[in-house]
Length: 150
Image (cartoon, rainbow, N blue to C red; front, side, top):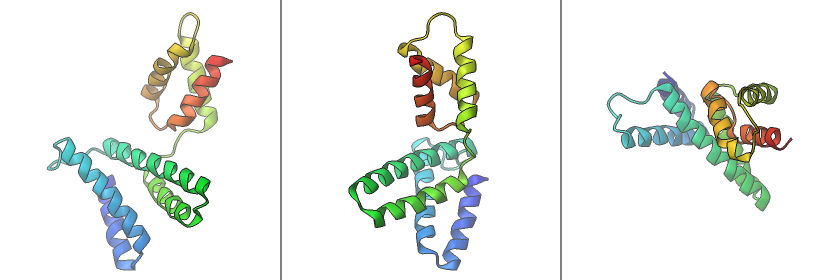
């Protein structure tokens, strides 16, 4: 379904002559195709949750590039990355708010027995992600770290 939506939006962008949108949508379809080939799922295609994982990887890449370009003072390139990031985010499910993530982390940490240390960070993150996968990984890591060190 998500793959079909990308295809439909690509066709519409091509008909409208929107070259920047066509470019990013082609990049996304290419990343999805690459994942399908890598997992030998070319014929049946990826499930929507697998496509979301590909899109999140693309989102992360664009965020990193945006940060690099902004620090380097390359505003034109930063604007391109920002636009691409906005397009990608339209196809991703809405992420949990910071407050909701904090509540979930507190719930998981309170369910663990004994003292919590930095060694438990990976385990806590794993449990939280198993409960809700629409969480920004960097935000989650920071919240868990803050909770452990508090």
